[in-house]
Length: 216
Image (cartoon, helix red, strand yellow):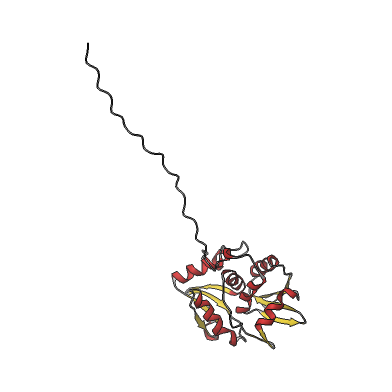
């Protein structure tokens, strides 16, 4: 009998490749995705140049902005929080956004006003949604970073607002009127990336070059 042919070696099959799963986006504890929109987010407008007036058990917020796209963004953001807002007439390249008097704003009026003076409450803090509203109303990119405008007559607010920025990893420089302020300027690649993370995606009306993390 002829010799048997040697058996072919058994080659083990490679295990099936596991699907590649992209890393999940880590949500910031303070970012816009961390909580649903609330009226309390309007504290971001008051940290900036927003003005607050009380009447009886209601209150109203007014803010002057320098571009029409800001009006569109703010009106939409206010509507998400159950507030009706009006676009005030354009005067000297400025526009105004004003809410109706609302009981929803009464808690902000009670916590932010000392008589007619605006001042942050002792427990004031900033979050992504609050920063988003502030950036939409009064944020501007600069060659040295990104600035967030303050109210010229709100000196009592400036120090606690600066402390609130530092508390969420955004220590900023206070600019006086000679430097284009009053405003806080955020500088440094890491801090600017942190700002972009907190305020979230650019709203469609905002020019990419004007939004934190946008491109020119």
